[in-house]
Image (cartoon, rainbow, N blue to C red; front, side, top):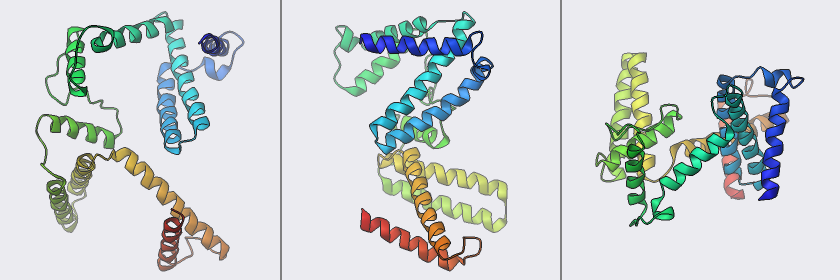
Length: 264
């Protein structure tokens, strides 16, 4: 622990040096708005590393994210708005306060009661009580993830299909509505129907206990692998996708799929 605290102090010192007189011109010009963008980027790199499952890479990317959080805190320290000590103290006290079943004498029957107690404690702290079961689902979440959590909240309130079969029927219905708008060549309405279709697919994923954002990330990577295979195969033939026929590329795509299955 002492070594960890020493390393943390050293990292904070580096940030202060970068921001201080004679420091780095780029670091000195950064604002909280700038750091917000880097935080998003670093968070997704952490997620990618976690998907990869390589501990060294996860540690590296987690370090990058930690650096940006400390950097953001340093900017507010310079403004004398709050300090790193305030940040740590606030979250420490909050976690103790919101886990009375661990740090106090409260008894709970399971995770559901923990969640209910958490919300009740938030309201006692002065957090605005929920006016809707959908309150608290962050608007800045990626759209797929937000749809997932919105439908999960609605499901908790009893607004849900009893089985995935009902969602599949809804998906078929949405496809029919999209086809009708395409026939009418109404792009604005078609865009709305595409949104409805994606939302219904997210609902199906939730019913199957599949996180759609992660599922789509994996499919994106699969597409990259297979299309890259097609490009390399064409390159070996002295051509590229712009010159190849769709039939040739489809055949190579199927070849890439077969190779993946054989290697699985």
